[in-house]
Image (tube, rainbow, N blue to C red; front, top):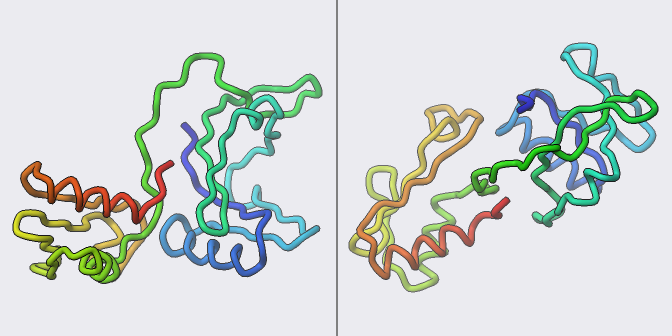
Length: 180
């Protein structure tokens, strides 16, 4: 696995690219580049990076999913060399184990509270968590919920007995995210 240390954003409207850049800088990593059309950037100067080619064989099997103005995908690949000698990302030669599902999005608890209320669920804040109906509680934990903000992955916990309300609220919660 390659540890993500920088992001280069390409192929989007100026407004969408800038929005995604600001989001990535705030929540993902401090190294985000968004070059203009025909602009060349050197990302090798401050990071250990390699130029690689995305092979047609790899990209023909990638399934992009639309997320707002963006298209994102999960890519499993191996680094190899093409006939020309350039480093390339190639399809994995061995079976790739299934990756864990990744929910993409940023849950705003106040917005989700309003959403649940619009669906007829009694909901209130209690101790930094959302109390949904009689039995279900939702809370956010992780780096971004630390005092003063921060960046990194978050976890959303849904607690309560496995009942009709639990599953209904869980489905509403999942509807707020994009599954990758």
